[in-house]
Image (cartoon, rainbow, N blue to C red; front, top):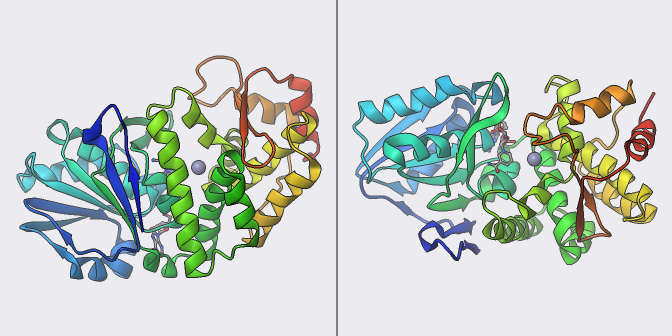
Length: 348
Ligand SMILES: NC(=O)c1ccc[n+]([C@@H]2O[C@H](COP(=O)([O-])OP(=O)(O)OC[C@H]3O[C@@H](n4cnc5c(N)ncnc54)[C@H](O)[C@@H]3O)[C@@H](O)[C@H]2O)c1
Ligand SMILES: [Zn+2]
């Protein structure tokens, strides 16, 4: 399976996403695979069996979001200098979204930009992070605040890698799949209701539909001036949940699942969504063991966290809401009282 991503104005940025194509990967010039010890231990051997290059290096970064930082970026760049990488060299990101974002950013910086390829190994990175060209690292001011838009040369998705993924990590990816279906594609949503993503055929199709959706959105709004922000559905609430739990209790996708439920409750209050539609979304999340609720101890404090979001450009809080199933509405004019009543449904 293949999905083509095209930015009409800049054909040099066009690329393809291959899904279970089991292609041989042939590169000329120097290549470095950036990965972490866990992914390398599980899957590097099988990747190397299908990869050919003139000169190959492996750069290993410790596992975890904590290491998506300047130090790891420097480590990647220093390796490239030490091995005299040049403009014709290629970086391969082999891991989840952490590795993908960091490798893409390193590729955008080294000698003002070299080629890079994404080989995502988590469901979340296969359906979301590896496509669309957002790259970056975290710093003490927040997540992903340093980075660049840099599209990869290609994305190679192999569902085979997901066989070793812990089930919570799998669920986290499902939350992002549900996000795309609810906001953009009614048919995809209805298909998801009856699908079993633990079966390979359904999983492949869900990945393809998600990548197509994201590609369609990104092609229209690469730099997130408008439509791309819809991909943050559930995230306004999720970021607060992640923040209040110190990024420890939930995986990002799990927090997104909670955030989707909260956003839907708000949409129900605003008559954008019916109670039964909201329940149908929840039913899918529950089937993949995703959390759908969170005990809010202080609704005012929760509300205040919305405006602490470092990326908020002004005082208005932007909510992405489901408008029925398969469509969305972006709103920055919602009465605080309506939001607080929604949050009160979650208060202890
Ligand atoms: N660029 C984007 O558009 C975008 C979109 C969404 C998320 N992100 C970023 O992606 C990151 C989250 O990505 P993630 O959820 O993939 O997390 P991750 O990269 O931390 O991977 C999750 C865990 O799974 C392990 N792992 C990876 N592949 C595995 C496999 N096949 N089998 C077993 N274990 C495996 C990893 O080593 C890690 O411990 C965040 O940093 C987030 O900011 C970026
Ligand atoms: Zn997300």
